[in-house]
View (cartoon, rainbow, N blue to C red):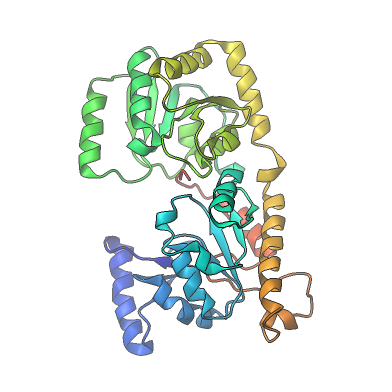
Length: 370
């Protein structure tokens, strides 16, 4: 994996020192470490280091997925290595370039919503593969102690969540920090919470099972267009119903296992939905069962997703090998699979993906909302 690096923290400062050392020795300002579960190359400007890393790793496929993915993909084009785009948001101004410059580079989108946005804007037809979510990391018995809201920032619907809690003083709420709050935002939120004793604020969690164990209802009232809504699936794995925004990819994530409302609807509508789900046992049981069933759908089964990723990778390799017959893939003794393919920004084969899924099942993970 090749990742961007922000200054600060022990990892950041150690990486910066090692990058300067590597620049002196090799001319490339990049450094490889093993702080994560897999080796990671770090650079302040990763697009400038991509060719160096690809050569060192003998990469056979490059997946560009974040941090200005268009800029990364354009840099990858200089290597003649197959490229696959992973589209994870619809903020086109953050792509790091004009997507149309990529021409026929194949792409995977993390939801039908994301795929349709890119189809409409750029005329491409991405394959849809939902985010990998290891169920064992999140599945838990529930005690239904609160309504949980993860990532309490404005774009995720903080004001809607505060409004609901304000009108439901009899219902306990838990606000769980995910993205680090800026000092000003933290101060403003703490001021609001002082007047709302039914809200408990929790810092970022390494093991989200501790959060979902107490969660009776998940609240996801985003006011922006979520590409998918990962926390929805995390919650539904344990049969937790969701009250969510109808924007972006959230309707796909929620499915029949929750209630959708427009963020522009009155707070009274949101309050009524939460209160009915909290107090009406039959209504709750119906949506809980639907949430659990939705979390077991084929599209988010890890084996199905790995097969889909392998197919997408094969498509990318075939597309390149058709025009570059000297590419390593074209000489592979088994043209129907990628064998030991080393990838700059993704795991290296379908079997490796399955191994990673098994290894990570016992490792807790903080939530992300996409």
